[in-house]
Amino acid sequence: MAGNSRDAGRSVTARALSVLTAFDTEHTRLTLTEIARAADIPLATAHRLLGELEEWGALRRESDGRYCVGLRLWEIGLLAPVYTRLRREAMPFMQDLHQSTGENVHLAVRDGLQTVYVEKLAGRRSAPVISRSGGRLPLHTTGVGKVLLAYSPSSVLHAYCEGTLSRPTPYTIVEPGRLGRELFGVRQRGFAQTTEEMTLGSCSVAVPVRVHGELVASLGLVVHSARADFVKLLKPLAPAADSLGRRLAETSGATVG
Image 1: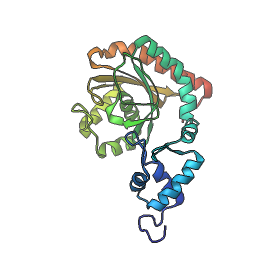
Image 2: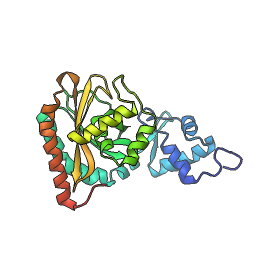
Image 3: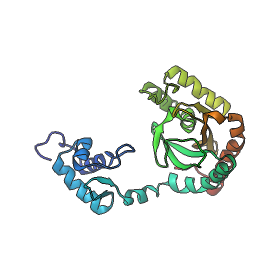
Image 4: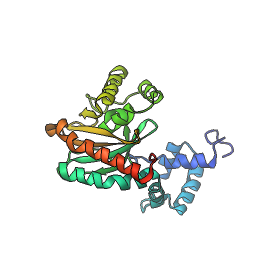
């Protein structure tokens, strides 16, 4: 708005997007003031945008005056190809894996420098995890993320390793040289594994899902550290990923996404 240097030069679209991105997994319900502060826009601008987004269904205002994400955004998000075709074709294989192992099953793709979880299946005896369908985690901290990073173009690898690597646990690999060697090993052996690198008490193993030789996703299992037998877990996991890749190739002949 005129007279406010913070808002000058920003398009309406940019300001609306800044309002939506104020929400994340740790901030699912926000007040008007909190949204304005996070979006770096004046209160009056935030109030107007919130009213329009609420009317459209992108946001919902609750009885206490706080705002949360509306169902309209969820409906549109589900139209993305990665959530429709990939999830639809992967679900039978994921269900078989979950039934045979009783462990957490994750399907993920790379979006920029982050892991995005397309789908997750968990059981009552599964290890506790912080991942969620549609959620994002750093690439270097999980099995599925390491697979996605290991098979990325060299430009992506360099950009990632040159950035600040978060350290959720004392066991997370954050040294660029060590991480590079780890990712080289992932490509050599065809699978990735982690040992309490995202969550203490949990380990993971993951493999690539390829269509015509090109990586389209990663499929992984997360288990309690006490019963982490990677060789045993790979026996059903690797064939499931191969079968999913063939299924995707048969149904479209093209990569997903």
